[in-house]
Length: 161
Image (cartoon, rainbow, N blue to C red; front, top):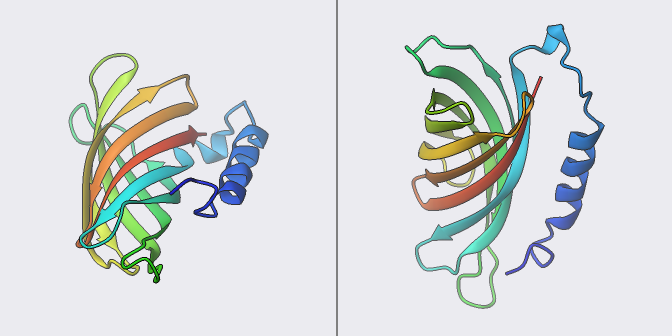
């Protein structure tokens, strides 16, 4: 399933436009806040893998877990699955997680998250991944996320203020 057939072109174009229109200079009133989004490959038992998208926002509380920063993130995910060739059940919903980000080098960090999904796959949500800090505001992330029924590999772009 391609991004185009999954109906993700418009949301990704909108997200890219918002990202590019965001101010380059960080505003002190927004210090610590970030937003992001990306694409995911989602799998669920009995269905083919599906392309999905997610959008999220959060706040970085800083290094309060030793060297690791504690972040709080809330977001929305959407994905369609083909289970029998005729149906296209979707999985979508809101989620909230606490994220620990442990710096490894000047640019690379290890991510770990735990929280709750409140959507079609409601329940516990955990994940692990890595982040690369491209510059002071822009971060690229790759994560493996496990929910009760859906497992995802996600690639996200994050913009911090």
